[in-house]
Length: 223
Length: 284
Image (tube, rainbow over the protein chains, first blue to last red):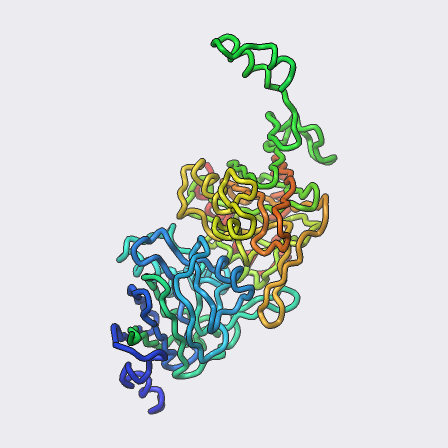
């Protein structure tokens, strides 16, 4: 890989965070891996697509009440648009705000397609893919650490993933709009548990057929 | 109340009992008919003795029922003002449920109409849309919330005049032993939403009165139906109209669907294969 790519991995977090502030957390999520953390109200989570074209499947829960969970449907119904970008409010199943996108260097992000699973992969690509890595496995592993189970999993956000809907309703995951170092920032409106599966999908363009690492940085803005 | 009611004292047990019993037999335009075979207007090509569910759900109400594999379920928008929000859980394994993301992603199609599979989170088809003269449906926006309906109509509680979909789904789930965590993203019938090129969602409303959509169940399901205004309904007042629900045993229709599967897309074929696989494993 190029020097530019490694720079995003080693750049000081303070220089990479889209919203400056005290560094609360800074982690590399390896290719195919899970991550979770509670982002306190007012703090900002910056996600860095280190190598470009990597789908970051993300779920949100109430930081103190895990029955509060992300709703893709409430989020897009309230926004009046299927694409998530700066200004989009991430909403729970009762349409209450959890986080707000405050920075976006890509332009749009998906929340229609949900996560890959071993089971849906058998439909999309064939039964030979049953035992490949899949996001739902990451969500179950990561969620279990917070007492979350299968019933709590719902359709998620896919940051850096491009899913257009054509005039005839055709919908699909196509080549991404992201690039190495592209970032997105979410400000927590309330304390929010963020659950990430750094998507392991290798059969479609969401990862350029090659899953890569991403970086998450949590900052606490001054004042 | 009727003359019977006014002539009966309810000050003692016998009178109260007579008063209560005198109310039976009332026919309204929003009620279940039991047995379903007594439904007064069965479809012309359906043997009434095969009906298993016959009910009209008024606007702002809900219903649920456990239906067998091979059931054909018909939803009809009587006045053009219904909006049927649907959730499915597998009856014999309710941890498996409708997954709307897979339902649009796997078939590469956001708009639900004839031929569309309703997929579970376990890679199986729970139901297939087999008839549809509305084509105004939505898999993207889900149902309404208490806060939304309170803001739009002044109230959203289940017993208000403008109940929110999640309030009613929560009741339907509870009556089947399920909790709020089981109230997953849902589908809507009879209120179309279109995605414009820039991603904007545009409400297309109803296709008009007397439109119907038919589903065939591949696996036994708990079916929950909520009839309430779509979240993008532009009407400033709550005007949801009645929804007619009919279901009947239609094993031959399922057999016909399975017999034609070779002509379908590969994703659908594999979803059907997965459903037949689980059915074969549990049927003996």
